[in-house]
Length: 371
Image 1 (tube, rainbow, N blue to C red):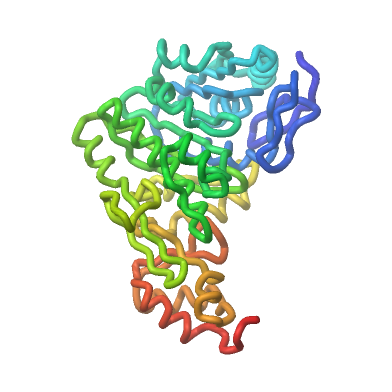
Image 2: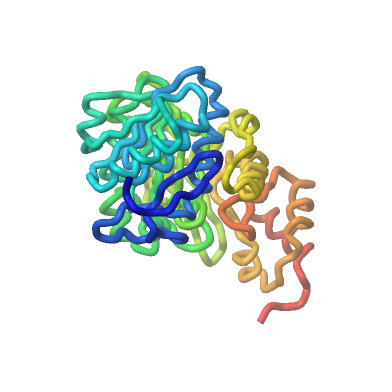
């Protein structure tokens, strides 16, 4: 058994290297197998979602599993799963095998394979792609490893390019023009989803979003693959471009590129399957309080209208101090659908036009001018 410490996450015991990341995106240390404690919530979401799918049996592939933490948690905590825990790093295999043994799992096996080869030879009901950095080089292979109606989960930790802080890199990796400012993280998530959709299109397949979100230092999306050219065309119809005028705050989206709508393309469709969210339970999760908080936000979050507004943005424009967020959301809902959003505690999403938003904001903002 390799050296390290045994921790408990959910109801699963996991052997991890003694030196590992505890926050942020983490760093890869030479000769050490990667593990990040902060991603416990990410792994919790996988377990909650797979349980909520309520499929009697499911083949699972964790393509870049490192210590096997996600794979063994799924095998141990989701009934009916048969899990392949794969990593190309030979140093990871002893940790994967140890974690399978520690938990007495008969439904999980270690695999030492290049993920491109793994998915060229095998297909699964659930494929998890959680690379260090950008997933862009691996998405097409991950799709090849998916069966009909499979679920594909993808993590992206290259938030700076996707959120527009490194625009040239976003153009190179995702062939998209990102958005800066208060909408940057929603833009980053929707660029990732757009990239997945365009890769799906090469296989004449569509996708149905189950859960897509931004948290901590990463973007994460779960989509169900829907076979057929009609599903593919319906999916691609959700891709579009955005115009944003920072001087007036006016913004709108179109489905064909033009001179004014230069940002994107983005996924402009839904982020959530609300029925699935309703079945997800935080019971037994490692980060139960955070799971409960996020589930409540996701279940009530409007995802029919991109993009978010932020009270700091509105305050700068109106020269008013922000009103109480709960009171403001309540006042907005008296006029039209509005909700908080998980992207930021100071952001909201609404179906109301900008003129109505500004009118309500001026009525409820602090009359004391901001400095």
